[in-house]
Length: 410
Image (cartoon, rainbow, N blue to C red; front, side, top):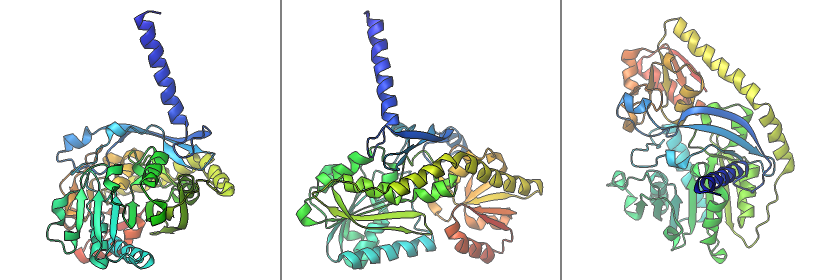
């Protein structure tokens, strides 16, 4: 065999390994996975702030290839490319400017403090974003907090009451960050960004002493709703992992945790799990739940196309009547909406209450993100709300500004 043959053989082996990894479930390692949803040429960074339209249009693109595991019910993007994603200071994900979300966030912090006796304790958050939840835990329970996230901006907490007890580390999480074991470890809306889910949870478990019984709290998007209702706006490149209650419980139990509580919250959008370290590592699983999800997966493509056609027709009807179309909400849901339907050129503007996003441009499609008050001048005929839970506050804002228009909610 000459050198060329050797390189070809090595490349063939590498491709075979890549395919094997794509077909193998990252949670239970089963090879019984099924491809059921594909999307090409989607932005790989939905929350990055682009300062020019050209930069936004030329952003990194990737693919989505959702596979369903018949072993544990886990769903993952087999085409996810970590090297195409960016989590940095220009990653703007905070929802804290919404009164609706702020109430939910505060209530969640109060609930955690009361249920787990978090007063004057050491707490840690993996994937803390800009640190809002840690500050709440500090303010409400005088807890000491450490947050780890590559997109963290410690300067944003300067002068915020309670933030003096919070330390933000703008890095990816590593076991060394957990050398001093916390009393409470939380990870909110981050696990869905992790490809090697089993390794990630096992790494966290390995750093925890069972005798200390550290409470672990995770929050992720709830995938049964996404599949059942064809919520295509919640499928995007950064979300490489999708959990139902059954598959999330399976992951934690097989990784050495005892699950103490699960819940579905925030208008059925968020799935939460609470657990403590355990010496066992057997997963119970729910076969009936997995089989029910498998049936939904089989019919997903047909149901999804009908749902997408509904939204295409709604936008096209508005444009045929000469109306200006605006999306309210410029985050990941809006990016998916704009890139999934093939009608991005018919959406005129995007607005958002987060001032950090104003006057930037939407990834992949280039719409300008305007402040809500600019809608007074724009006078939209149709505003499409990217998240139904915010319909009340958005409708009130439009009314307060004297903007009269049709409002539709995903």
